[in-house]
Length: 250
Image 1 (spheres, helix red, strand yellow):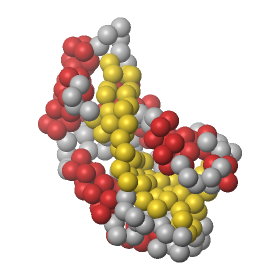
Image 2 (image 1 turned 120 degrees about the vertical axis):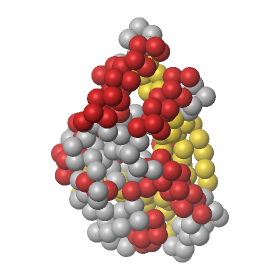
Image 3 (image 1 turned 180 degrees about the vertical axis):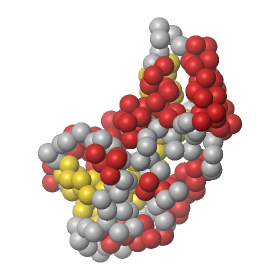
Image 4 (image 1 turned 60 degrees about the vertical axis):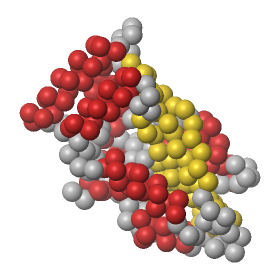
């Protein structure tokens, strides 16, 4: 399936079931760029706007690029966010047109080499690009048990591709002084409906049919085993890898 269409039937669950990102991770993105209100951000693969709203809340103007119309239509409006159907490989943004480029939970869907060239093209001299990922922290028993279910039911190697995406971004030779990686603790507190929505929002897990029903039944059993007062907590590591382009644009 074309990556831009994978979430067409999952946008509603994406809104309900996907986690946010800790404030410290957003701090890293803006550090050293001056007043956020003067920063223009291109948020690639913006989905339903979870990341775009966090960026806009700092005062930045955000160009949220999301090629999937169902995802765009599920986004809450924000006067500081401009939505566009562009892709990471062909943004349509002017050369040196933005100060910061971000990709939250999305870079693995891009053509790495083409997207990196486009990112460098649209960044102003001295600008920054970053990929941000929430990954399960399976030192936690509930999170590890959920991860086991994901590995049993996954329909393609998307999780491995996420690791490859972080490696490709980190290894890219266009970052002035190399890329910098930081990690932060994160968590998502979920009731049963939220946990099921998280699973249904995951494009590489079955949503319907016999496999979907079996997965959702197992999630209900897992929830009952670990819930406290009707909630479970998914523990995560938020990974931020950022690279700056030089003052001469290289």
